[in-house]
Length: 298
Ligand code: AMP
Ligand code: ZN
Ligand code: FE
Ligand code: FE
Image 1 (tube, rainbow, N blue to C red):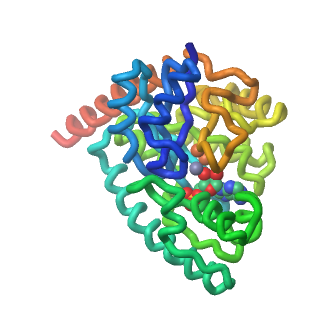
Image 2 (cartoon, rainbow, N blue to C red; image 1 turned 60 degrees about the horizontal axis):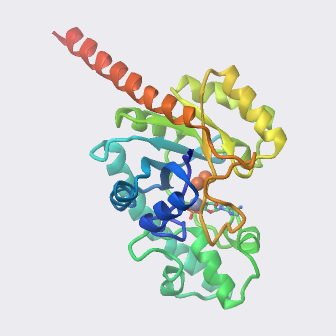
């Protein structure tokens, strides 16, 4: 049995509902699957219910967008408390995203590429959050572009014609919020940010580590052999946990298979064991910290 710690449902821009994703995980013989939607934990409850029914362990997570050093980076938070400040912050980010969707539609209309919100919604879950891959699919359906990649390259990618910024946290804030919520933080697929060389990313990693970063994705479906070697060397140098998965989305990234990483293999079970251990030590550290603070006040 094997695991996959990075997958999206239709709570964000994956094409399957949480129940369907867990069914797929079972088909792929996964013993555990991470639910890591963008900026939302909306899919967790349904995933937990399906996981219990089907005997698949659910690893609750979220993939936060962060802004740093002029770039955008994704940070995964696992095992966060749903009653934490982080979740309140995510609710504000959701509201900002809804505004941003309107801006993207306005931008497209001005470019002579009108879309109705309902056409975009057709590619998303009923109550899931809309993201740019949904806009891309609606643009394909209208015949504006041929592929998702073309939609991003010409219109939707950061800085392109129809792009609208979204409210984001800094990685330092995000790591702090994840820890305050009792979770562990993992830098998702650093090499995917093409504005930085691997050498530059390695320099940045020292800073993320000083903010308390717990782990880095060493397993990832789209890593090249060079990126894989980089991630593993960086992990060792900065004493980080290993993590990763397929980053499965379904329809919008049809070449990615749930449970499969760059090696064609899945993520080994030891990775999840170590993540869970870190949750325990983070929580113990946080409790000790609170106690020493309250002692100091007395
Ligand atoms: P959003 O949540 O609306 O910011 O969209 C984020 C999603 O867009 C991510 O899942 C990425 O897979 C996808 N994405 C972002 N930038 C690009 C890009 N330049 N090319 C292709 N896909 C992208
Ligand atoms: Zn996504
Ligand atoms: Fe990501
Ligand atoms: Fe992802």
